[in-house]
Length: 173
Image (cartoon, rainbow, N blue to C red):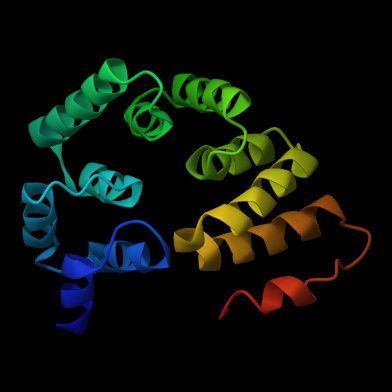
C-alpha cells in the first residue's frame, strides 16, 4: 500500500519518480496509471511508464499521442524522446535516439538512451561520458546508472580494476 501511495502521488520528475518504476510489479498499476493520466502528468518518467504498461491497441494509441505531441512541438525534446521510444524497429529507434542525442547532448533521457547505443558499438568512452551526464542530471535513474557505470568502467579497462569508490557512494547495491 505504501508503494502504491507513493507511485500515485509522488512527482514523476526528480528522484521520487522511481516510485513509478517500482509500481510496475503491482497488480493495480493500471489504476495508478489511469489516475495519473487523468490528472495530466506530463513527466517523462510517467510517459515511459504509460508506454510500458499499455498493450496492443492501447499502446498504439499512447504512441500516437506521443508522436503527435512531438510533431506539434518540434522543440520539445522530452516529447521527441518519448516518440522515439515507440519506434518498433531497433535499428531505426537507435538511429533516431542517436540523432536526437547529437542535437541535444545534455538532455538527460537522451543520454540515458545513448549509453546503450554507445556500449553496443563498443564505444565505452562514449557510453561512460553519457552515463556521467546522466548521473549528474537524472536523479530518477541514480541507482541503475551507478551500477551501469561501474560495469562500463570495468569493461573499458579489462586489464585493471577501476576505482569505483565514488560510484559506491551513490548506489545501495
